[in-house]
Image (tube, rainbow, N blue to C red; front, side, top):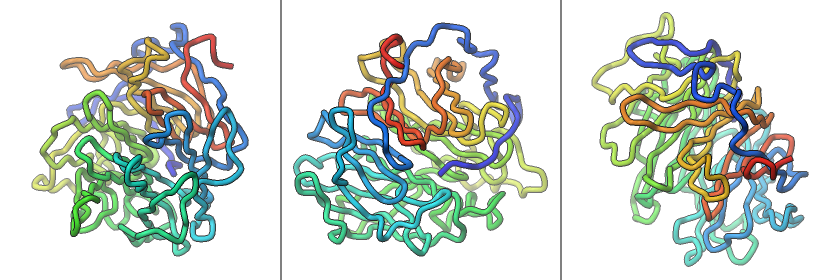
Length: 372
């Protein structure tokens, strides 16, 4: 997952603004607009939390070793929903990394998972579920991608408003993208991909490129914008934004740019390849070392957070929220709430937000005063 090292705080470079949270709205002095309430504990290295269509009262938590656990009534059920531990290679940035239920799952029972196989390659596999169990031997491989190194697997799977399945893949690993895969269009690595899994003969296509290690992206359920977190090398963590309806092929710059800054001694971008697009938010290593992307809050439980995108950092536990505003970029707020080892965020059927931490906790975003 996202464990890359990153660096300095805010700058103006290459014609774009990188927000320094210390001068931004809130700057840690305002009262917390929300709290984090424990929901369940004892999970084993959780890497994701998702909701299942037609099952509004339970959450499904991914564990890095290869299991999906059902959380109901404040506890994780002992019997796993899906157990792939015999075929998942775990450790470091490898493991069980993504789960997406088909939008029509309540009728067709389809779901898709993303994991690192025993050969350390990426697999996306389709399953069908009956009841509360998935047969691990009943899958159909929809992607097998060779991985040259052990890191930068990306991981997120999610269905977009267009009904297609989206997947974020890292650049293949090592450091500084030695084979230049982020900028190459002849590989799926370093890309945001999509595929119409309902259409026979469809293929994966590139939705955006120039990514290092996209550790969590999400769709704003109110409008369809894609918010994507990309883990940096040793200077910047970044949040990228793809507006709903965007038709251009966006290039987020890696490995020529890290965040807003051009890398020394790296080749120039080939301008014919995509539309170079700057992050909407970056922060440096003094504030963390591995960004964890979240969601735009669209629930009702915490009115003060509506319309704000919540994200965190795995290393520091810092949390920020952003809100778009016309013509001036997002308003950035460093939240006076921390969650150390935050690995992923998720939302339930009602749009309420949750987060998991690598120490085994599942937490809910609740009004101030209701948390611990």
